[in-house]
Length: 173
Image 1 (cartoon, rainbow, N blue to C red):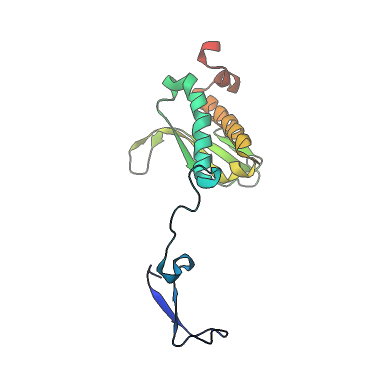
Image 2: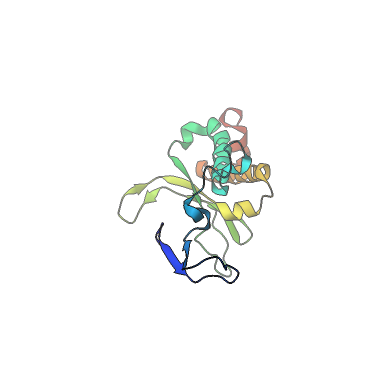
């Protein structure tokens, strides 16, 4: 239904003083012609950001910690977030090395550089799956720690070094 459209409905029982059809707008918040008068939550409140924005912030914070040590080697690597994985595990198979999983559920994936369907070159990228990761972390700090450990695992595969070396940094290896 388009915004501002109106529907004519019959009177409700218990509305004895009303005559004629009752007009109902398409959105409950806009009854009597008034929309929301301001933000529902002020920006200072923690819930102001959406869940996906919270996840993105945690992912960027975790990646920044790795990137500060390995920036020159990660310049050609992208970070992406998908809501859910679009891959399935067939019975009897195991996940390939480039997938970090919790049992049968993939949490993240390293997509190597290659060529897309139209023949254009693509950059390597780390893909985090938001729903599986957030379901395994009870709060924001645990989510950031989980995302960090998953990113360390994927960066170690990309750089072909151990996860301990990724955490230590290039100067300490």
